Image (cartoon, rainbow, N blue to C red; front, side, top):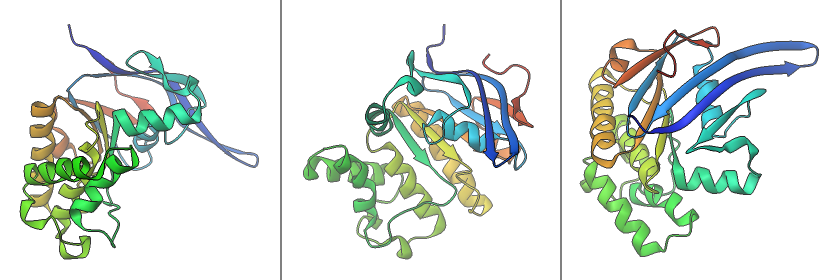
Length: 229
């Protein structure tokens, strides 16, 4: 029997601006299993990024609940949510969001330092991860000195620095050429398998999504039949 890491239960999301209401998600149910690689595909505006943000406490559902290891993350206070994000969740975006004034190793080490890990251990972890993603020769390089694929691999290493249970990736290959995109997806699969980290990857590219363990499709705020299975 598979071990459920995260459960989304009947989640809906409506944005309101004045008298205008826009329903983005409608009664979404989803289970994410420990260590799996799950792709959520769908066209732009289908609601898949909103769902990802709600799973990561970056946006709040209008109704429904999200449970991580059985604990409702939206029943927590802001401080506990921040602790959970730091300890249990990692994030990868279409734009790498590396800080330009810091080197690759400093960027990767930063979440560990923010979480209170001492400098020596944080940098040891960062160096090991950068070596793992094939960037041991780029430790001291600034983001401007890295290629697009190298920046995204650095961002993946940063997402893993605190050894999260779940990494949420929003169009992580959207700005990469085909070869770099394939390399990044291959890396996600290898790291998920070897580290036991679950990945939820939002993408509009079904060919890349096909490399994941499981695929779900988002259409107009609803997941396809079979969601949560």
